[in-house]
Image (cartoon, rainbow, N blue to C red; front, side, top):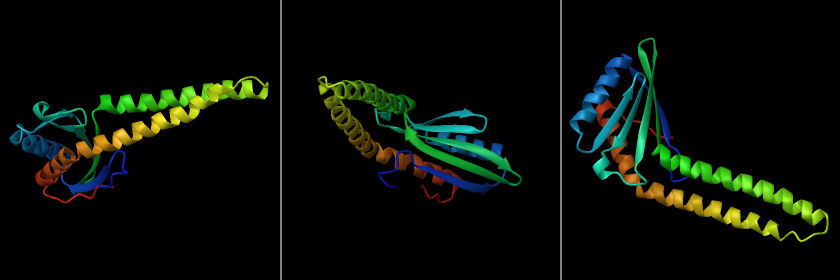
Length: 165
């Protein structure tokens, strides 16, 4: 898994019935309940690190299941806790909106021959965005071992190798 992947994912085709696979995964997670927990909704399964071992950067695996004749299409998406994802998403959105409006205001003032020193805020916002990106990459490194643990658990239960893209 490359560090440049923001949210690694995979797609796997398994022979069998969707309900049987979901039950097999739930039973496998139950055997390792000291390390992992799960949330199950029909067609979806979330695998997380046990709360005793979680930290801010702990990842989770979201699995979705689709039945197609005799095959199950499993789609897996690794990502941070939704709260962490939301913090970074809204931070980027806020920086983008602030840059847009301050850029318009500064360029308007500049075109009128007035002081446009507010335009210096745009490189500052870009630097903050870069710091956010670097901190997200560092956090991904901190949670990498737990991500591998979740991935190996999934492979162990399904008894199949999965390539993450």
